[in-house]
Image 1 (spheres, rainbow, N blue to C red):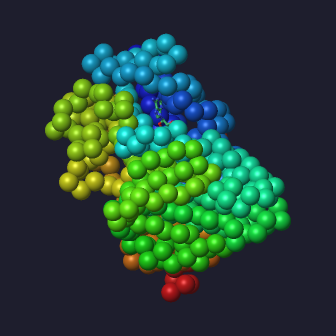
Image 2: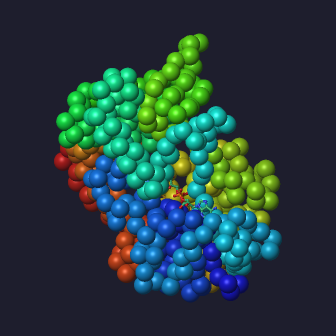
Image 3: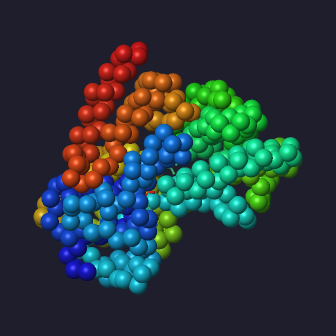
Amino acid sequence: MTTNSTLILGGGFTGLFTALNLRHQNYLQPLTLIDPQERFTFKPLLYEFLSGEMNAGQVWPCYEELLHGSDVRFLQDTVQAIDLQQRQVELASGVSCDYSYLVLALGSATSYFGLEGAQENTFAFNTGGDAAALERHLRACLHQACQSRDPQQRQTLLTVVIIGAGPTGVELAATLADLLPNWYAQLDGDPQEICVVLLNRGPEILKGDINRRCRQTAQNALKQRSVPVEVITDAEVSAVQPERVEFERHGKTEVIQAATVVWTAGKATHPLVKTLPISEENRDKRGRLRVEPTLQLTDFPEVFAGGDCAVVDPENPLPPTAQVAYQQGGAIARNLEAVSQGKVPQPAEVKLRGSLMKLGLGESVANLFDRFEVTGKVGHTIREATYLELLPTPIHNFKTTTEWLIERFFTNITTRLVLRVL
Ligand SMILES: Cc1cc2nc3c(=O)[nH]c(=O)nc-3n(C[C@H](O)[C@H](O)[C@H](O)COP(=O)(O)OP(=O)(O)OC[C@H]3O[C@@H](n4cnc5c(N)ncnc54)[C@H](O)[C@@H]3O)c2cc1C
């Protein structure tokens, strides 16, 4: 690969939107996007994909399709090693790529806190593939339950445990507590037999998350689903075995038999990011890369990093969210172009506009600018409108820059909706 090429490692929110913005800006350097997956996952809408409210083309589109008609090269491969000194990247296929500019957009990894059996016996919920696998499994459990005459076996088949009451755990629990009774009723099962349990280590759900201001609304919504979600706090999971979750609570060991266990509990720094020769002082305490306000690495200005694998101010980190990664993708694109033209890169400005959470089928909460909370069906409309506007489309349709999309939505649609509601 030519040495003046720009490599983007990871095609998530940061990486894909860096690539799309660069092509929109008519960036002249050869550009390659590398990701092990064939498809981009629009994670905030993964629940809609699981429930069938949205299809794979919207939530889980192929990179080839998204980049069709552009000269961005897509390599479906896994980065195995990054040599910042030699400006070289090694891929699992054995290919080695040189670069002039590099974008680190690898996101984060899942942490199982060293808990034996957790990875093997739980479902992940990070990609379109994970959502599709979970859907297949849940449908199979419901079918089996309909045919089972053994009440204990039926209860196990109809119980779902979600470990971790961060935003993903809460949104998934709320979605399943509406969806599964619905699916089961279609099979002539008794919807009230469905049991959705949300286990959380700490005493509060959504702790330390951007959505914590919506905690009360979320708690109420979890109680009001087709079957109420059973939220168990102060529950430290101690073992996960096939169809069995064990946890410690108030000094006692408790067990739940469940055919479906989903792990949404922990995030860790991406292992490749940990291996980079970056000093402790240029990392935060979780090992993420500390970047300059321009999103460049201090000692390697030809390398940019954004999203979940980077932090600008370790004392005051931005939340690890799609809205941050998306805006940083736009900023990296602008700065890459500036640097490649010998111009001065500018500090990336990230504006937090609040948060959006799905709280069941047709129900969401939108916390706007930390000032307004809109719930129920109107909240749902705001959430859907926001995400539909942000869905990436094939390059020839890619309308315009990050700022334009966000400003258009927030200054027009949201304001009108909020004013109408309040
Ligand atoms: C279910 C779910 C729901 C969410 N909902 C919301 C929401 O409603 N709002 C919100 O703001 N945020 C939400 N988030 C968080 C948000 O999606 C992340 O913060 C965001 O995706 C981070 O973007 P990123 O580019 O840093 O990483 P990612 O989007 O995770 O992208 C990282 C990419 O790197 C690739 N990669 C990993 N390892 C390698 C390797 N070795 N070689 C090459 N490529 C590699 C991965 O395949 C992936 O495509 C949600 C997350 C999840 C899991």
